[in-house]
Image 1 (cartoon, helix red, strand yellow):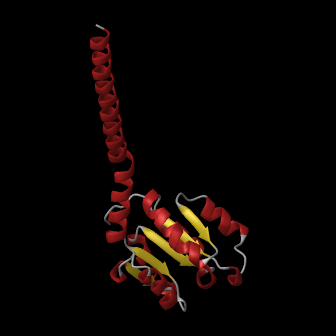
Image 2 (image 1 turned 30 degrees about the vertical axis):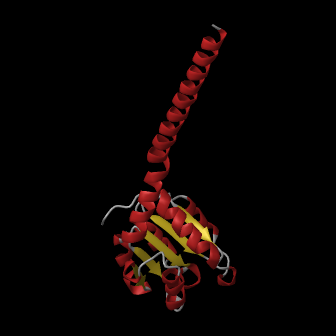
Image 3 (image 1 turned 90 degrees about the vertical axis):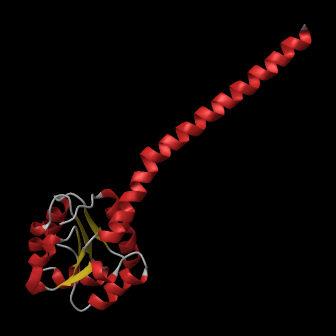
Length: 169
């Protein structure tokens, strides 16, 4: 009798462990599908398709190469926009502005930004301090970032691609 109870107890314990393990595996799978996979999908879609407007003058080659050399962005998805053609940036879902060369046009560029677009202002310390009215204008827009270091620029671009929605324009 004791032996039978012990055997049934072991069988019950094995099935209980199997059921809990199976439930945990299913919940991990559901969590991955609902949490991680959509973020990775959005990032992959953004990296493949997103058009980047690079507002830059003399530093154009250097900044564009920094993005392309990372092997995350395609050369054809990065458009260099000069001071005379600011409106071309309206069709891009990500705008990167080199502040030292575009400090006199920055408010116009901010006005071109849609709410769902991201704006990254690259303002190295040697380019001078950003005026308070420009800081307030940048701060008033959603998905706007100020970057002071070239190394942080790539990181902030990736974060912006995850947090903003990609939509073909």
